[in-house]
Length: 390
Ligand SMILES: Nc1ncnc2c1ncn2[C@@H]1O[C@H](COP(=O)(O)OP(=O)(O)O)[C@@H](O)[C@H]1O
Ligand SMILES: [Mg+2]
Image 1 (cartoon, helix red, strand yellow):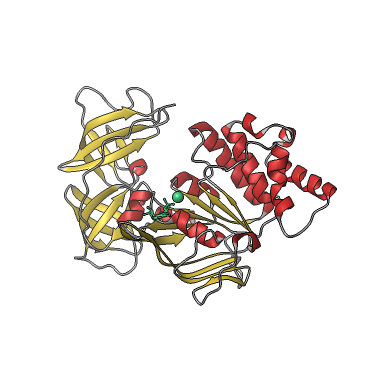
Image 2 (cartoon, helix red, strand yellow):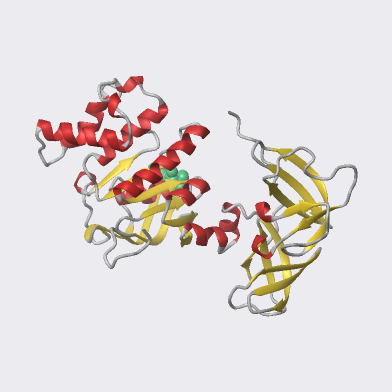
């Protein structure tokens, strides 16, 4: 749930981590602040190298930060005045991208391991009960006696999660746990994780570079860029109102169009763009004459052979490229000189009129997001992505 209690499960303040390397200092994390509420699942989302893993490893105590403070359940575990609680004392468990399953042990032994090496002593029957419960939780009770070398990728993944849950940590840390699985399994596991988080009510940080995983799994998304937090909010907030070009690109709102505000009503803004007039939902602090950058969602533009505008302004366009991507179509179109990517769920052949008929692009207000009150440099539209190889 997104309700933040007064005392969060995790509080990270001004966290800084710099790696010293032969080729100079790498500022991996540049003074970030965030919280994880009790029972909340927070994702750190961002491209490779933005500092997600480093942040997680600092929380886990596997990395010693260079500044700031970290508290778990109101206990200071790191401060720049010298406190640094070792990993095994912190009430956390981590699931690594590589799973780190021990091949010389059975599934049962792998999952039981944290109970056997910890400071708290568990009886044999206690261990048996807890391991059985953890294996049931990830739906592989029947694999207890299997050798760890005899597991598929998905099964190894479940063992790693069971091993993390067995000590009932206050905070679960997951670093791209699905990225080594194939696309189909990743989709299934995504939903299983969601169900698991709901069922256990656990507090968790989930690191991923995958937008859908972040949107599906989290109460709160933290988008990271170059060691900083670019934006933080509910999945809906960061998706529908990206704060800048970086977040907009990451949210797949990749068409960026420069414009100038001409008119403002109670809930709408009209803007002059190179191919006509666009309408977007109102945002605060804008006035007529402001130059803006508008992100246009590829999946919210509709192509048809009729200029009759149902949900918004409609513009004559030409289709430069079209590609069939299995469950959707991608089009590159041109509105005058302005290129635009369009994504359509209508995959029927001949969905677009053939034979030189005029085609119109409808761009409803909800497709348009004003992401900046500056005109940003306009990147060239990417080539149409190819479907993932099975
Ligand atoms: N052990 C390390 N030594 C030096 N540089 C590192 C080390 N670990 C990570 N980095 C650098 O820190 C930055 C952030 O890395 P990382 O936290 O792994 O990012 P992410 O998990 O988002 O891909 C990157 O520039 C990376 O190259
Ligand atoms: Mg990483």
